[in-house]
Structure formats: C-alpha cells, structure tokens
Length: 162
Image (cartoon, rainbow, N blue to C red; front, side, top):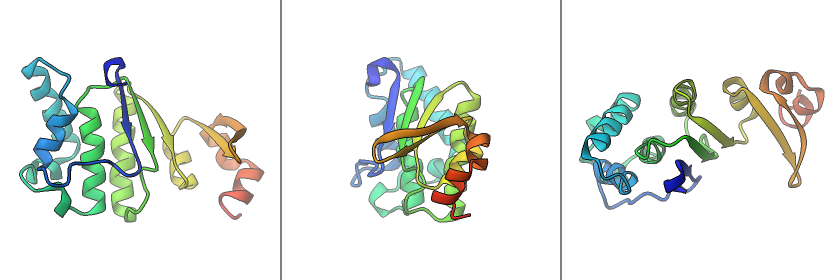
C-alpha cells in the first residue's frame, strides 16, 4: 500500500513502543530515499502535532493513548500519502484528544488528502466529514452527504439515540 500512496492507521496503532517518537516517524518514511523529502515531511508532522516534536526522544511506550494516536497518524503521514485509511481514530481518547485527532484529519483533507474513516463516534465524524456511509450487519444501508445523514431519522434513532 505504501508504494501506491496509501497509509493505514489501525485502531491498534501498531507502534514500536521501545523506540522513540522520532524513530517511529522515520519508520513511516522508510521507502522514501530523498532525505530532503523526509525532512519536509517531518517538519509537516511536527507542525501538525507540536507535542511530538517536544517529545521526539521519548519512548512511545511511555506516552498516553492520545499521544500514541498522534504518533500513529504522523507516522502514516511521513509517506506523504494521497489516501489515508483510519480505523476508529477516537477509540479510547479523551474528548480533548479526540478533537486534536479530528482537527488534524480536517487539515489533511483541506490539503487534498483523501481520508476514509471507520468511526463509531457518529456525531463527531459526521461533523467533520463531507460524505458518510452507514453500515449495519456488514451492508451499506445509507449513504450521502454527512450533513444529510446527521439529520436522517434512522441515523438519529439508531446511532444518536434521539
């Protein structure tokens, strides 16, 4: 997938917990041979997640769940992908960290990166996406603009409890 410009950020994150933040990020760029591109991508992810630059020498295994999620997303971005697949980005995060993660995804989307997100936090995901698909029992039962889905009676009843 990396050779095709696709980054996958799993719910488990699959980080190297005994390596530093910087080492994890550089692992995300292992297919890039141009050191200048790696430096530019590193500068971009540090701009997106300033906390990671502050903690670049910290072992990832000693970080909070939200910080680890930032490392996982940043590592995927080191590829400079055209498409990012993100599985449950808010899982286990505090509301504040959830906002940071979703804000970063919005920034990436504005930069032209396509993002496919699987997320159970329906209210938040519909607020930050353009299009949504509702899957029940493995089948797409609804799709459309996120703003329309947020107002859909079935979505509101089943997923939002209203």
